[in-house]
Image 1: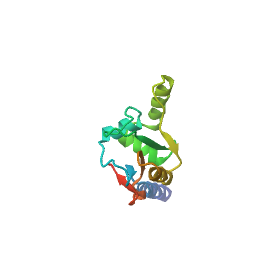
Image 2 (image 1 turned 180 degrees about the horizontal axis):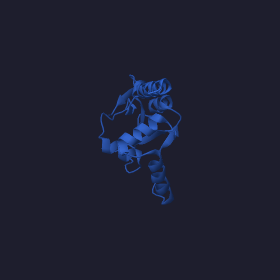
Image 3 (image 1 turned 135 degrees about the horizontal axis):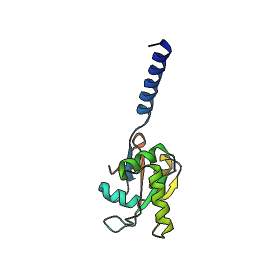
Image 4 (image 1 turned 90 degrees about the vertical axis):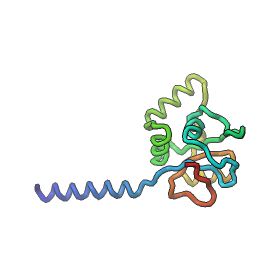
Amino acid sequence: MPASRIYLLIIGLALCLVAEVAHADSVAVVSARSPIASLSRDQVTDIFLGKLSHYPDGILAVPIDQEEGSPTRDDFYRRLADKTPAQLKAYWSKIIFTGRGRPPDTVANGIEVKRRLAANPAAIGYIDSTLVDASVRVLF
């Protein structure tokens, strides 16, 4: 094998490792002040897909989404609802067109999600696990 191919192979493997290390998992969170102690994966999925509008205790659930194209958003919906960005976009297009709902409000990033959670204990969002601190409670 020529040296140039070996170098390309090494560089490719290194980039894959860096990409994997740089990406942490997303986690569903509520404010630490929220009365919500836990939710199932299905409940969180239903809240973010507009199928469920209230928590089990009757409080209105306020989902906070991150911008399209965000790696955290893509990871969250892939793991939560098994949907790619294109599938999620098609899902919401159908829901909006039929008048059955609207997608969650969107913020720029995990820091903004945490700000919204701090301002509204009924809010639920997701952030990169590296942003978890005492201000939020991880649901899963």
